[in-house]
Image 1 (cartoon, rainbow over the protein chains, first blue to last red):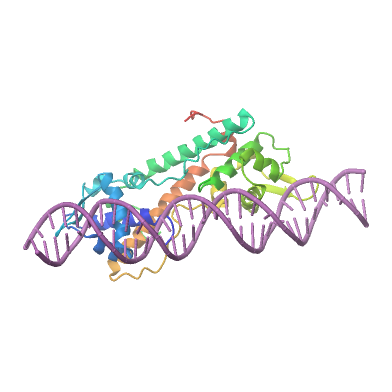
Image 2 (cartoon, rainbow over the protein chains, first blue to last red; image 1 turned 45 degrees about the horizontal axis):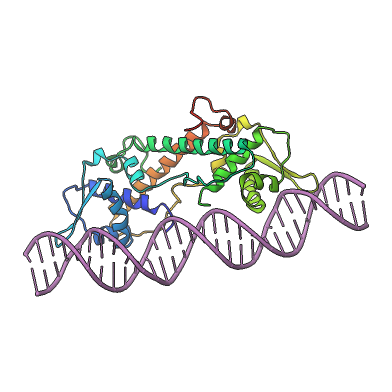
Length: 141
Length: 141
DNA sequence: GGCATACGTAACAATTGGTGTTGCATTCGT
DNA sequence: ACGAATGCAACACCAATTGTTACGTATGCC
């Protein structure tokens, strides 16, 4: 697969879980549904657990479950939980000759931060539940 | 450097050019300002030329110049010219067992496409000129 | 015409990030 | 005690990006 499969996997799993919030699912089950590996699932879902979106239990009847009402989980929560980033924070020294260059560099970085913040704001307007039952979007779009 | 330096380099160069649109700049000059390599500059700027944002001329007094008024170049133009993509179009077969899984997969893919479209719409609202002289944004943000 | 300049492009090494996989420790329930 | 599940580390593999060198080609100046 390519990059961004983490976000895809997370969204897929969460919206799948939203369909039956009581059910506990194992990494193996989820991996089977998503066509990947249990370890990969635990890696991705572990970040969502750190962010308080999921809970996991070890042991015999263990597995994964939603930690919150799926209506209360926005795509922004998932995005930031996975540490996704457009701008990749390339804040090296650069140390150009003139300060004009340096100011322009900071300007570009600031613009990219603004753009990413707009993206997060946009993601915050959509919940996991809306993935399962879209409001007005065409589902084949 | 890391990923996404293409977009950063393109924005940096374009906004720098917008400050003096008549001047012709060589790849070596641009690379020197951006702290990278002339070949890398030509690679990135070549895509912008294919998109009609820049012109390049070979030979003795050759170099790069803006092909359009910087007011007419939006960040969306740059983004699509560079083939940047959030979703990475992971449209493999997947061939899951049940059709419910398949429908959910398409749903997630549709959502990610919507998100990316929203991002492009947001990028379309900002021009190269606005990088140099931001309207109401804090320049140190 | 000859020559320096600058783009265009191919080829390659090095680095990075992501994914898949194996293995093992740990924890929980029966 | 045993099986089942997560947690985590280590590793190989693959793809994308970047940096670099080299060469071809076009352009303008002498």
